[in-house]
Length: 292
Image (cartoon, rainbow, N blue to C red):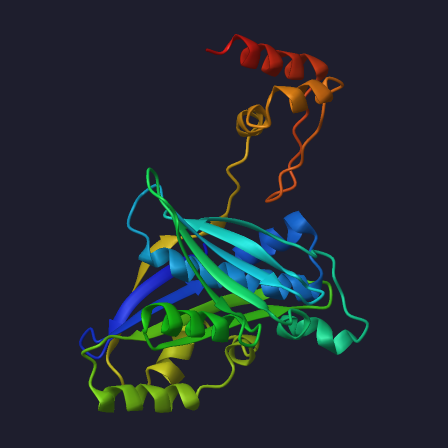
């Protein structure tokens, strides 16, 4: 089954629901970047969060970036999701591991102080960017804090990922529920009570529960709600030799003239290598020299 983004509502459309199953996407990210367990966990949670954030995109050519900049040893990373569900990203310390084995499953402890930044980009306009301080380094709590600070929208967020000791992803999923301004207080209290009685999402996934089962048995127990698939998601990089060539041209003639022996740049998002031979560099230089 393909990884899927879901959206829905509850209590007569007074609460919005966003949900994602990102298991295969997180596994591909782990494989491409050879991530350690703790980096896999951080990457998986950021993938789920960025996918959820992408459900607010309106333009076909737009995307949303989630960036964590942290002072701790794990340091953070970046994940981008576009309107079509294509996701790419990287961790700044992909092979980082702590000496205490048990701590390798708690990335928030290794992030420390830092910032949580969301960037929404669309063609022919300046990107929108919002940033808040990291609260705990647990991405779910920081995403809820971000929405409250930037948009004053009360949000409940849960992100879970299960990995084994070899960083194989067993399950990765998450959801966000947002209260709209006209929601009845009694309805909000009922939902809060359900959420308080819901065990940790990762523990429920470890028992073999799907996201839909978690909703039925816990989160929306006794509550009318609807949930429909919005689109599939997958890890897909948009790099190419042509894109790298265009980037090289932006460096300027002087820097290109220092690369006449050829170079082999590596994509930050998927580790693909692109060889530019001396002839390739010569062609780029000639194109700059003859350009109007």
